[in-house]
Length: 338
Image 1: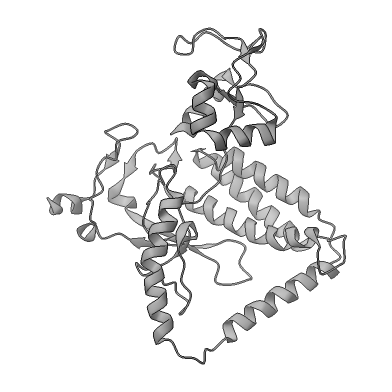
Image 2: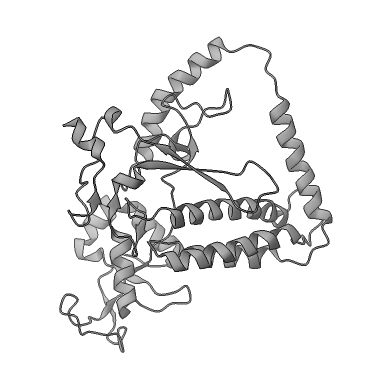
């Protein structure tokens, strides 16, 4: 919700300019220096370390920092002089509500492989992870799944077939050697930077069908280009360029999974906001998106859906308390629960 309001503010022309794009200012100095230094130590340390800003400093810095910005909306009022402690902020992607699909025990489709925390699609958060819940998820998942994992280890055979692991390692090693000897002309950092721009501009907080289609097309082109990356540093070990080249193709695959899933889901749900489909549609979309890449020859992910059983839900899919109340097309099964 905070990200949406920030972007709406910027889109109305109230953003502050910077080399890194428009942003807004966060003022926590209003809380007082004692409060900031006692209760917001981490925020203050980050601001001072990375931006050289003491967010507890309320001293006025300039009177013309908002010169030229629109002031014609009563809800925002007149511009005010910038204070030294204001922190520049803008929405950034830093966690995922999806992950590797698991059952309630944390087991994945690969026997013996367990997944927990934010790396897993464990159904703890659904489509909108609440802020600050990453630690609680790690603690809860670690406690519950850890017990299942320990029990599995006690019952597992001592001799384990490692053919799949060995095949994956060999495939990864072969790909790194391919990158080192590839005679392509593509620069990994140009591809990565453009991927980030596309995802930020067209697959971000607010999504719309036409822009998602544009993003999907360009990401496919970037994925094709990633097959011709030229690594200039030919050393296998301690080579950051090789590491980035190795990861970029995987990042593009994930970007394509996200974009394709967002384009196909013609509704708004949780953090997935489609401005062309603003309502939540439980009748059609009360299901889980499963994205996979079965074949290395594919240039697009395989998208499937797993229906959610309303009758087994501890909490039925009702209004969640944010956004407009009348937003959903309810599923008929929800009425059967009552």
